[in-house]
Length: 306
Image 1: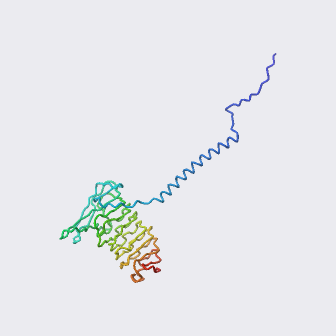
Image 2: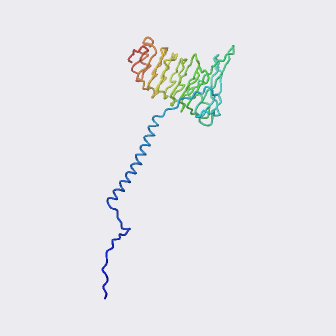
Image 3: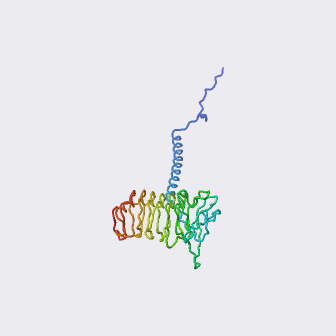
């Protein structure tokens, strides 16, 4: 019988049984790690950048609508239909008070309050509008079905009085400014009470009185009253304004309320007068009760520890 040739071992490797060398595996693992690491770092950078931008975001300055007619405006300051105002005679020679009868069906960015002209005997226009005094249950929007959220509030009239609770509890309102009466402006009790988003108020030189809790619970950070003709600041007028760190008063203040800065971060009060313009010590202690105020700095540079 013829003998078969010997079996020769083949050097061909079965692909299904091919294995990766340790060096190649390490290279693949390194590449995968680098890719996932780069994705993680990129995502982290995006998150940090977003947080930084948000922290640096500044609310836009209010846009004065001097030439705009009364009513609501959107963010681009285009008119939004739906505002109807009402005037009611106050029974006084000073004229009428203002209330809002209806509001637009959608939220608006800005509200311009209307001008009311009452000619006197010499036919000279007298701007005598004031916002309506409401009881504790309502504000100027009390009779509207919509809970309006606005950012800017502009008084186009020579407003002489902002009535009690006129804008209390409004959410979203940030800036208040306008053509206030040049002789006297009175801000009533709780006029902006717990308008928690209120960042700025353009206090005119004619400001004479601030009522009890008028700005309590707002987001005001700075209140500069030293150039006004303020004579009275009411009880708890700026209480619980947690962002408030700077506060000044004019020498004309003679009626100091109680706990006007309680719950704020104000430590130093700037006063436009001298020690001789201050009331007695007991009144001062009550005025800053519940606050962090530790000293009053006067116009001549001297100070008084509280």
